Length: 447
Image (tube, rainbow, N blue to C red):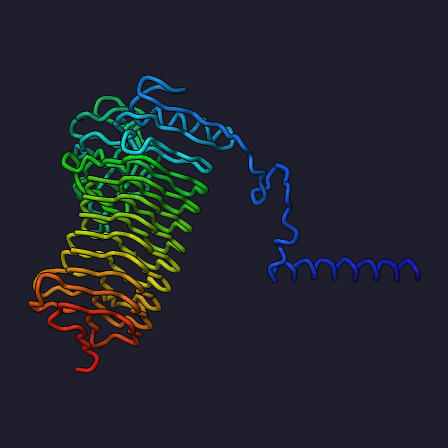
């Protein structure tokens, strides 16, 4: 009996202690038990010592720890650093011309010398396939070999033979015999001649998938737009990320790409800071579908198709202190399920159509960009003679438009400062300054 009683007391003490610890963690007590001088413990990714030195590998054209001028040398340096637990690859001044994307592993920092470290790419080529390939195949046959080489990046595009949709596959060439090329992975899609498939040497400059804790900084990325076909921002960009976490892109120039400057899809906690994304055919910065908590701060987004494009389901993001100028369509575009984002203290100027657009997104119960804040921005000279500075379309609701300065310096013509669609929901507007328009507010809800 005493033995059983002791066991019961011990059980209750242990259970109480466990519950108390859990309660402390839930109530923010984790900081109280955070180690002040942690040790490196195998498998512990939360608490790591602040090491004063990590591995750095220098890559240069003719100097450094590794020498070369293409994707192979940068990739080799990154893989080496990653294998030893992470560190920095420093790209020394020079122009590096890629035949394939550089793939970023977790835990690395890729940095350069700003304008002097230029990463660009070869001109693209497109060649039709000469034979059918099934979804389980790992090879393709082209009508001619063209300039394709082992190691090249290749984009395969076709009409889906089953539903008529678009098929897009990104692979690398790992072997060849004449016009037959082996790929690094299986196709998993049917590339039949009935869908007119082609192979193109299209790829992002820097890319990553299912990785985390990466820094990209002080690099100039040039997409060689004049000599490359368009690659949609859902698949490419000067930087293209997919299913990644905790990336920092800082002091990077992303320019002249026939597609997006910086694009990330289903990526969380991405910081784009002090970058210059300009003269890209499509989007300057593209927080892509499902991305949570992106921060786009202090950038210059100039002369793109759209400056900042919030894609589908981008939530809890911040765009602050950006200069968004002379983008041919929209300065900022917000749409499908993009909720709870803040756009604050930005200069949105000389937009080709609309300064800030809240897109109409029909098709679902509530697909609109709700609960967003537009605060303290300066929006100047939007669109043509019938341009609109802020256009709230569809059933967008619970929007805050507060403390903005909205100006038109070219004459009023038919220009409107703020337009609210007939179906729009609640919009809070206060302390906005509107000058130079034919109409400050067109509220179609009252029509």
